[in-house]
Image 1 (cartoon, rainbow, N blue to C red):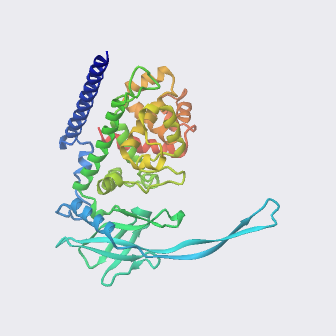
Image 2: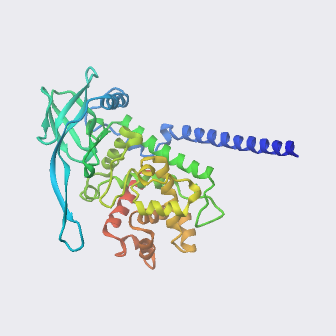
Image 3: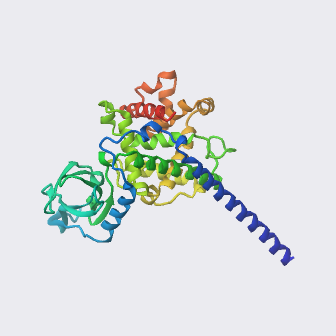
Length: 402
């Protein structure tokens, strides 16, 4: 009897291992097939000429070198002041509690810059308080302040690229930690980088789908079906891109192709760190811009998915965040009535618009807007103004992917 149990256990383990290997091989084969150039979406955008003169060498390899140099040494300089704080120590407001708070008032930014002629990388220091170079022989300007994605330009000497920067992060907590990032610049907006960005985006989304299939996570809408495969992956791809397209620039008429190029460039330059430091006033975080309550809701609704429990860590892991996005799509679909659900699943464009609206403004508002509005529901006053712009962005970007 004991031998029989051991034989059964060995058989079960063999079958499980065989399934695991088959799934992993399938995952590798699918990912390999994704990156044939003819299969890439945004083909015209990815291959578009660089805004400035093309670099002509493997800048991505040099960016990795630059980031390693910044990480291995070169400490940042910070300037603090001590601020006296106080608060009432009792309900009667008769006693005060006092303490000193260390406040960051100035800091340097380190720039890894490369000479495009001999490909030598140098570290130069930018005075964040004086807004000028602190390294003799270099004239550097801050073109756009945007945290870790701030844009710098070397005006003198000519022929230098800014490959990566190092600066304090978590400013509300005193900026004690350092972050390393490659900000967007027109000089790095080249086909090689954009292609890498889209390949990376597509890879994480398809890996997320495969993991959801592996863990057999079932849909709330159709319990006999799996979440994986219900929603086309290009919906998730489009939503990531439009999340990082500034609505003001979009509405002001900046060409959509240019805005898409910028997002793909940032992803290509940073890959697993892309948009790691993008945190909105509503605490939406990372590449997929989830807010904490939505993520906690998905943890409760889909325990089998095995999402990372910590919100920040879950958003920093792009595959995990992509899994969360597919789970949210499924959850948002559950708010529509059965007739609408079937109609949406048969119409990819309508499905994408419904999910985009729900992703930005919530499924409840979206369902309310759709009620009795027909094809004009996207202009409904039930939607937030920002959601109506979001839908315009989705229409523009998804149309380019066809």
